[in-house]
Amino acid sequence: MFKSVATSFLVILLLSSFLFFFKLGGREFRNPDEGRYAKIAMEMVGTGNWVEPKLYQLDYLRKPPLFYWLIASSFKVFGFNESAARFIPALFGFLTVIATFFFCRKVFGLKEAVFSSLVLASNFWYISVSRYLVMDSTFSFFLVSSFYLFYLGVTATDKKRIYFILFYISIALAFLTKGVAGVVIPAFCLVLYAGFSGQFKKVLAEMNIGTGVLIFSAIALPWLVAIMIREPEFFKFFFLHEHLQRFFSKRFEHQGPWYFYIILLPAVFFPWLFFLQSLRKIGLFVAKRYLYKREFYLFCAFAGITLFYSMSKSKLPTYILPSIPFLSILFAIAWAGWKPEKSRDLLAVKLPLYALIAVATVIGLVSFYKPPFLENILGEGMMLYVRLIAVIVIAGSAAALIFLKNARVEKSFYAIVAFMFALSLLSPFALKRINEPSTTHSFAEMLKPMLKESDRVFIYGKPSAFYDFGFYLDFPVSVVGFEGELKFTKGDIDVEGSVVTREEFIDIFNTKNAYCMIRQSDLDNLGVVFKDKISILKETDHKLLIQSDAGTQTAKRRDEINLKI
Image (cartoon, rainbow, N blue to C red):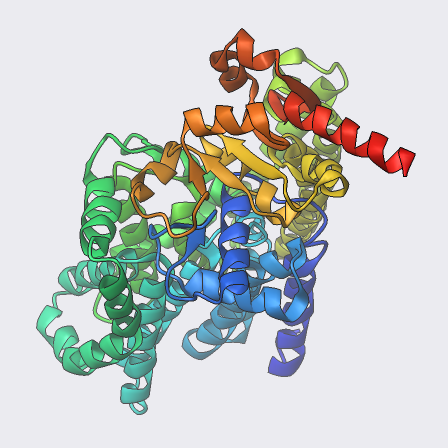
């Protein structure tokens, strides 16, 4: 496999394509993230306003627009559907695997390139996030590419200028995807690397920062200037509130302790983090650091990203997605260069495999008893997937052990990659079942044939559970009040009726044919008088679709007139 670059690349290309794009549209959008981003891109296409991202006709300026532009472009080509939306994050997840292959091919060799690409492409967490409509995989591609290009730039004997130009372009696009982190993270990690290597001035001189500022300004400034002209408060909100305060303040959502990502790492890097021989090899890479040392540079990139987000008060598991390619390469080159000389060398891999078989066996057996605590965590009907996962892990680990018996390291490596691939193939089916309570697709499909042009449709309270409702309904939907994250858009209403007060909402429900998506708790808070004047059309998982009784009576009278005619 390692004799031909073309054959090796073709294998990586086909495997990765299947894993990233298989059944992308197999489930509905999951709120809040997928519903939010799909609706923003849909409105961008509908209004033709590509400068100000809007959510239910309200400015949504928490992030720059590149991710929305890409989804909106996909919608224009493929139509408004789940596959078209998820194609963008899946594409950039796939491109990161391809970029990793070529980077490792140039820096290490073909075998290391194949191993690195397989470890990354088989990473269950990386695949799952890349198939989910969030901007992290797109941001990760630009960020990871900037690190690859920087290293190629500082180590190249020729084409230095080209590598650094591409480096600055990647940083600018990372900024346009997710904001200030696209600039701060590379700067933080590269200062960390240059400082430890003892060659800070030399690295700084080779970067040609003046050229970088010009390139960044040419790419990022047009949108920044355009949006600040339209929205004078944008600078304060975007840079101070959404970046500086969110990083340092404890009053925002998604709070986590400093060790949040340390606890998460075993799950993110399953199963590679459990193999002691890999960890020992990576430890040697770090210990033998010196300027431009390949492995030490990769470790600084991984550690710098993890450390940066660990310092932030706001934390989400997806934030450290850009760190996965770097540690994947370190694991891969540790396996690629491993030649066991003693029986104890093999034991460092055999023990984790025996542990995986034991744990998977216990979990598989327990799943047959359907313990309530496990069903509460995973959801009803998930026991079948638990058993399948257990079988896959046991079979893959057993195969790897059989190959290790004859010291066939490469085949053992492929056996582990194979069972990780198999786990990834289960993901679309398992996520569809998990996803069902988190979408309003069935509500929208029920309401669509009932709607008349004069009807009013609302979402009440915090809209995060209903973001995809407007996407699937494809009908004007108004928001009742400024709740949740939409409270920061107060006073910036461009479309009349896009937001109504609670009092206006009640008045409309008393006099017109109207429908509303609402939580059970919010309906209870509206009181008995209001509840007596509505009909519940559909109810699932504490979410309800209600219709005004005034509207019901109007519809009945309309039907009676039509019958007489």
